[in-house]
Amino acid sequence: MASVLRHSAKFTSGISSSLAACARNGTACAFPCHAFRHRNSSTSSKIRVDLDSSTGVAVMTLQGPPVNSMCMDFLTDFAISMEKLELDKNCRGLILTSAVPKVFSAGLDIMEMYGKGPEHATVFWRAVQEMWFKLYSSNMVTIAAVNGSSPAGGCLLALSSDYRIMADNPRYVIGLNEAQVGIVAPFWLKDNMVQTLGHRQTEKSLQLAQLYSAPDALKIGLVDKLVPEEKVLSTATETMAKWFSIPDHSRQITKSMMRKQTIDKFLSNRETDINNFANFVTKDSIQKSLGTYLAKLKKKKA
Ligand SMILES: CCCCCCCCC/C=C/C(=O)SCCNC(=O)CCNC(=O)[C@H](O)C(C)(C)COP(=O)(O)OP(=O)(O)OC[C@H]1O[C@@H](n2cnc3c(N)ncnc32)[C@H](O)[C@@H]1OP(=O)(O)O
Image: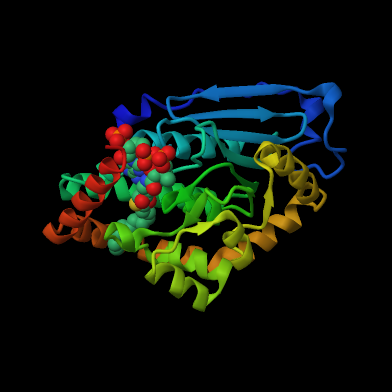
């Protein structure tokens, strides 16, 4: 873990107190306050964070080509960035987006699950859990600006956010296709999806490992809005202003009330989930499935 921490984002936030009123606990801020714009940026190998402390909005840009897959470095950078933003009183909202063309995130880095022992699986799964937990339980308003395909763990990022805006491109897909990869979505991710889509739709989507085109994702409620690709980020910013019009304290308490049951269940079963994952993913049969899936991904190119 220590070696991973060395890659952590350097995030600085020297914000003048006069702007603090516009931020986390303030409701008086006329958004946006362009005249006093203060920006703080942090960049790590996989993630860039830009916080505009005059508006209270941070943009987290995933920048790990070729497909923003979630390797250990990505997960660690993500968790550290979330922690810093959560503690920053100038930050009220977070927009997640991608700098990689056509891909929001390809989900978990399959190489982190292939050919590795139980010890690695344990550390990796704890980091995956932590990423979901930090985003799902965030006090900030979280908006996913999905500007590319978003299978599996990529869909997890979107599902854990408060609102999802996707580029209106039928070639972009989103969904939980874990079963296709030969693995199984964990219970907390399934619960997260049930809350968004309902039980029946989730059951079909998970069993069939369905990836939905952007228009189909809108139809079933997997995303909230489709806009032309060049407007994804600006729409996310406009949407943020609407969410900011609600007092933070009442919105946060409401959010935590809505998510409490899922979070409590996760927290009481966290270690069991890690053990299950480590046992499951290191089985010969699962390794064989992952190997076949990886080979198919590579073959696509040949
Ligand atoms: C209790 C039990 C609990 C069990 C455990 C439960 C876990 C559940 C939670 C989540 C699980 C997951 O996320 S599992 C991950 C599932 N992810 C996926 O199935 C996505 C697979 N990828 C894709 O579909 C596509 O790559 C896509 C994202 C659309 C982009 O397509 P493109 O044509 O632009 O790019 P490609 O040519 O396909 O890919 C570029 C390169 O990236 C590689 N690549 C692509 N996706 C990758 C990935 N996820 N991990 C590693 N490498 C990947 C390809 O092999 C290529 O490598 P080179 O050929 O070497 O260049």
